[in-house]
Each structure stands twice: as C-alpha cells, then as structure tokens.
Image 1 (cartoon, rainbow, N blue to C red):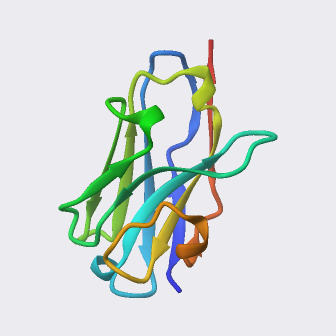
Image 2: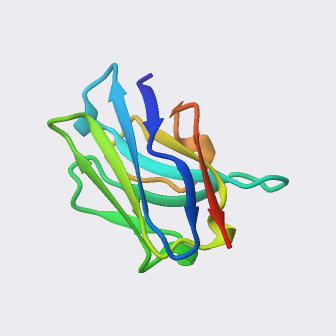
Length: 124
C-alpha cells in the first residue's frame, strides 16, 4: 500500500476556491493512478476526479466538470485538486485514493490506499 496525507481543506464562501493536496509515500508514485472522492454527511462516498499514473489522462464526475481540476507532480509524489466556483453542495470530507495500476477507477473497491480525509465546508 501507499501512505496518503491530505491537506488544504477549510471553510470558504460560495464562489471561492481551495486547493487540496495529497502527499504519497511507500511505493513508486508514478505507477499509481490517483483519485479524489468525497463524502457528505448522510451520503455515500462518491468519485470526484481521477488522474492516470503519467498524468496524461484525467476524469471527472459530471458535477465538477469545468470547476475542479486534478493534477499531479510525480517528482514531489503529490496529487492536487484545484476547486473553483465552490458551492454549498460541495461541502464534504474529501479523500485521496491510490490504485496500484496506472489506470483510474471511479469505484471505491478498486482503490487500495486511502488518506484520512480533509474537511471542505462551503458557506452560502
């Protein structure tokens, strides 16, 4: 497994921006597809965005397309989620996940390493 530590969450007003970071250690970072999931109170965890091991392919849930951007820096073993035009419904705990393959999966069960999560709260 790989160890993941998220940071960058916080409280922001609607329309604002945040950038989440996820630092990884433990196995060759570029061999891992990375993803962000989120879980709002009372809801199931859902896929937000994913990026392939090389960074050449990115995938987004429909509800964040055009607002969020996932990227990675393999030299720093870090993946990012830039979140713009935030809405109150984006309020959730955001989790970083890794998969021991270069190919992204939006299914929780396919991702074998998880961070502890970082809280994002968007006020109206």
